[in-house]
Every structure is written in C-alpha cells, then in structure tokens.
Image 1: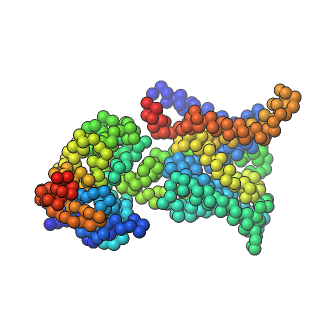
Image 2 (image 1 turned 90 degrees about the horizontal axis):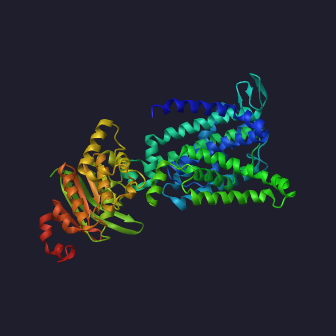
Image 3 (image 1 turned 45 degrees about the vertical axis):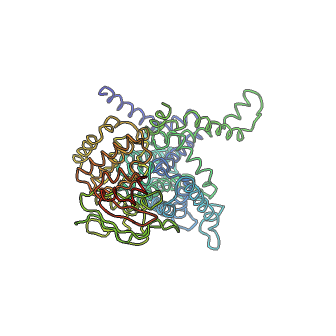
Length: 352
Length: 237
C-alpha cells in the first residue's frame, strides 16, 4: 500500500487540474450549452448529496425534497430582486437560505417522526406539493411570490465588487458568467462532498446508520432518535436551500414550475441509481442523470443524419430511453452503480 | 432490601387496550428476576415501559433512587438501564464488530471500550470468530448472543431481557441461559421476561407471574417452581 500513496496524490492533482480546466475544455469540445449543463450538474450534486443524508444515511424516504430547493431559491429571489425591492448581499442570503430551509426541514420532520417507509413517503410528497402550491398562490391578496409568473431579474451573485454575471479576463482566459458560476458551484459541491464524508464517519453518521437499520434498537443504544432524525432532515434541507439560492442567482428567474414532484423524483433517482449512502456513487448518479437526458436530445439530429428524416420525436424517445436505462440499471445493479460498501456486502451474502 | 428498580401501580395501554393494569414489582441490586406469563399477558409492555420505549399511562417507576417514569430510552441507557429488545433487534447490515461498537455509542473512552470488546468476545467466543460478518447472516442464537453482548457494551447496571429464548432451538436456548448466568455472575442485575417458565425460574433468584395485565404470583423462584398453580399453568404438569 505504501507505493500507492504517491500515485494517489498524483491522481488527486490530475483530477483537480481537470476540474479547473473543465469549463474551458467542455466549451471547446461541446460548446457553451454543455458548460451550462455542467453548472446544473454541480447544483444537482449538491441536491443529491443533501437528499442522500436523509434517504441514504438516515433511511428516511423523502419524496418532497425539491421543496427545500424551492425554499432556498425563493428565499434568495425574494430578497435579491425588484419583487420586494430588496437587494441583500449574497453572503447574507446564502446562510439565511440555508437556515430557512433547515427550519422547513424540521417543520417537515417534526410531525413525521413516527412515520416510516411508505407512510413517510406520502407525507413528504404532500409537503413538497404544499410548498409548490403555496408559491403558486401567494400572489393574492398580497403579492409575495408573484404566483405562476415567477420572479424575474434576480440579482446575480456578487462577491465584493466582482459580479459573476459579467465577463472577466484573467491570465489570458475569458471567464464568462457560465465559467464564473462553474467555479462557485464547484467549490460548493466539493464542500458538500467533504461535509457528507465527514458526517458519514462521525458519531452522528453512526447514529443515522443505527436508526436506518432498526430504530427501536437504536433508541436502546442510547441514541436520541428524535433529534437525530430531525437533524437529518435539517442537514439535508440545508444542502437543498444553499443549492436553491445558487440556482436562483444563476438563472435570474424562478417560478413554481421548476419545483415539481418529478424534480424530487429525479433527485431521488440520482441517489438510488448512483448508490444510496455512498457519497461517490451519489455524485456519479447526479452527473449521469443530468447529462444523460441532455445527451439523448442528440437522437433527433442523429436520425436525420443516418436515415434522412426524424422518425421519432427525440423528446418522446428521450424519456423512453431514460426510463429504460433506469429499469436496466435496477435489474443489473440494484444497489446502484457505485454501491455503498455495506449494501454490497449484504448483496453478496444474499447471493452466496 | 436495597432495590435498584421499584415499580408502583404501573399501567400501560396501547391505543384503547390496557396491556398492564397496575402492577408492583421490585428488583434488588445484583438480583436475577424472572417475569413469566403466557402470550399477551403484558410482559413485553411492562418491559418496554421500564426501558422508556413506551410511555406508561399511570404509575411510578424508580431506578437507583430517582423517578424515571416516562423518561425516554436514550436517557435511561446513559444511566445504565439497558434492554435487549424482543426479536433481538441486531443491525442486520452492520458487522458483528460494528454492532458492538454501536452498543458503546454512549461511551467515549477508547481504552475502556476496547476492554469492553475483549470482555464481550471472551464471553461469546462465537462472536469473535464472526466479527467481520454482517449480523443479518448469523443464526438466531448467534444474533441473540450479539444482542446481549451489544447491550453489555453500554455497561448496564440493570439489563432487561425480552424473551431471549424466542424462536431458538432447544440446545441454543440452554446456551443462552448459560450466558445469562455468566452475565449475572459479573454483577449485572437482570430482569428476564420469558415464556419458557421452567428455564427462567431455574435460572433466576425470584419470579413474578403475570396474567392478563396483572401480577398474580410473586415469590422465590424455587417456591414458584414447586407451586401447584405455576406447575399446572406454565410447566404443563
């Protein structure tokens, strides 16, 4: 093992350099659209890691997770747009969004403490819908959220005098808004990964594992199951809230349309497909499930090139292939692409 | 007698059904006490209330001189009142060693925890052999051993055992009771809830007999074993 340590360090340096060069390489190879997709993928990594805390670590099935993303996004949008005429700085708004989302996490967690599995899933699903319907309807009698029209002209991220929405030149490289956001999102995603890993190996992480495995037994080990479950909801929501704030500033426009049940399910798919409970797997799942649907858009032009005409509308085929990919994955790798060590061990024992 | 646990007029209900209808019992320090009775007599409900997993409807529970009625389980464990749940409740996907480590959740002193591990493995050599195996792959008897070893990891002064012999082969039942005696020999006070009345009474110092939510007999284990009432109802004679 001693020989592998230097190589490991070299590998990390290479990965770091690749990540730093990624937006420029991607722009040259695939075009600007793909830089945007990369930015979105980084946001989804944060979201998936947040949901992984709730579902993967603590074993609480949450089908309304996107609500926390919405809370974070609206928190930022309302306080940094002409909607309410407020333009708070982002360094205040991001922690505030995280805190508000955490409070909502506890609001969801507290009444559902006794629920598990299917029942919890239904309640969380309802919670997600409540948030979306509220955002849709809080435009009357007092217009707060501007209803279905959403909020426009959201302030871009601004750190000191440096606006991420503007193009900057530095060291012979041109940093467009997409590049700027990439680096901020990358930093946040890396931080999310580090926090997730640290949580996993901590006392808190062990308490979550115990609750996931057997809640009654966990309580008789001296674990305060109520607080630990609330903590999981709050921590997961925090990740969602931060990602939401970043999303709002990145898009400049948000509406309740972005926070549908299907989006919750998509994030859940990332967690499950990548490998529930395993941070690396969840990151992989988030990247794959952001990139795959986008890549499948190219099926239209490919049909045109190969057959001279488009037989099947790519938007139809896209969801079909996506669904098929999910089914195949679950058939052949039921614990995810990159399963958590523990689930893999269990699978092997079941087979053997 | 200097009692470690005193229960006064304890009542427990599930929904509308009253499972325990005002019972009194006490356990002295170092004692090994059996609580026997048929299915549905209220034994497990009593145990759950004592361990803080269930809030009693009425009554008073005193542990080590302080009232603990309605205190949550995680709080009681920290004061040395531990329970081995019915159906064992091991963490199936965690290895044997990880299960034991979870038992030491409330402790922080690494050296002492390492000693606890050694003691657990000495008491249950079978677990030492299987320390890297997921608990879900152990046999029923081994899981029961693990559940007991795990409960010992939190260094209990009072251990509540819920039906340790449930669903085990007769040979394994004998083994489990041997370990119950071994744990008792280490000075741990125990309350043993059992359907296997004969083994429980042969193992314990004293016994309580429960019938439809009430305690109908309380005496020395030997006296109970020879009581016609117990012999007829629980020993099948």
